[in-house]
Image (tube, rainbow, N blue to C red):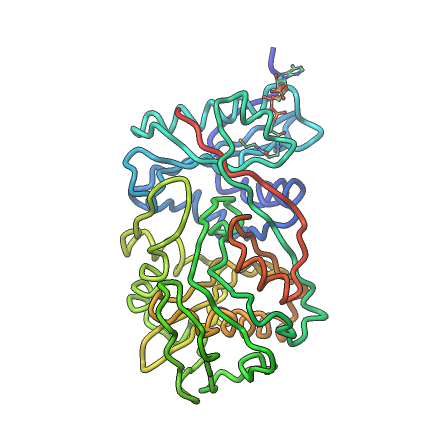
Amino acid sequence: MADYNIRPAAVADAAGMVAVCAEIHPYLVRGEADTRRTIADPPAGEDRAAFVAELDGELAGWVSAYRDVRSAEAGFGKVSLLQVLPGARRKGIGGALLAAAAAHLRAAGIVRAGATATPDGLRFARRHGFEATRELRYSALDLTRFATPHPADPSSTTRRDAQPRSAGSGDARPGDAGPEDAQPGDARLGYPLSRDARPVSTRAGDLRSDGAPAVPVPPGAVRLVSLREVDAEEFYLADAAAAVDEPGDVVPQAPSFASWRYDIWDNPDLDHGLSTVAVVDGSIVSFSLLIRAGTRVWSDMTATVPEHRGRGLALQVKIEALRRAAAVGATTAFTANDESNTPMLAINTRLGYRPVATQYACVADL
Ligand SMILES: CC(C)(COP(=O)(O)OP(=O)(O)OC[C@H]1O[C@@H](n2cnc3c(N)ncnc32)[C@H](O)[C@@H]1OP(=O)(O)O)[C@@H](O)C(=O)NCCC(=O)NCCS
């Protein structure tokens, strides 16, 4: 007879769920506030549920499951952060949690789901019908030593961070922004950057992802502001525009404003003061979002709208967001990128990020 118990998560489980996650995925930045909120007040239309496993009265693992509102495929969902503490494994708990999550999704009409698995969880995932589709690299940056990166490679480019959105959720939302070139000696990399207008120039011959030459941004044309200083609806439109070409396991679609607002804007762990936005001619053109939990921050998304790519804007906003984080005492920044996102990986390496873990995005029919 099983000596464990599976039940729906309660708000009082939030601290324990965050602790389990910190032990199994120390490179994720999962805030307790957001965990509490998603249990107490789940978003409309996502059919969210979370289940916990108790072993000898202690929380030993958990999973969450929901409809993926960023997928254009009807009936696509996510099994997120299925995890069991090492000391409680091989007792059937992982299988029981997965069964609870899958039953919940099936009851909501969801027929296919994505998940992420660590290398040691891949065998389990395969046994349960998941196929690995993509490799994700998790990286960390020591902010106590964060200094102006030297753009040694003029040909390297940056792209949208391909990180799991809502760091703690393990939901790969891979991105693929156009090239964000940095140039040797470019004042754009001057450190620290001010939040006010800064000159941005573009290397001659710099190409956008569509092959068109990038139009130089006139000196003083870019204003860096915090997320606090921009309008939610305007930011939603910029986020939706920047996400149009995200690669992934399903065709993406922009979530509704209400879903987006819940997921991104109203996330209690998103730091609106550190998250940085580039504004050109009064329009939001690039941004870098940071989730913060204590002294750790997570780059939730860095992206540039397509028509402004190829100008170094993503690099600029990311540096500014990290600089702000370091200034308020954050000591480590984390991010994740799809292994195929060579340009974003190149820029993160140049910023000083070092790989700390690998996970595999997986998909299964339920
Ligand atoms: C993957 C993970 C959730 C599995 O948790 P778990 O509680 O050990 O899962 P189970 O006990 O149901 O199954 C694990 C193995 O134990 C075996 N097992 C189950 N009950 C057993 C028992 N009583 N005695 C011995 N072995 C047992 C299962 O057959 C299974 O074998 P397999 O690895 O060859 O498939 C856990 O390893 C984990 O948290 N990994 C990190 C996160 C991750 O990758 N999650 C996967 C997402 S899809």
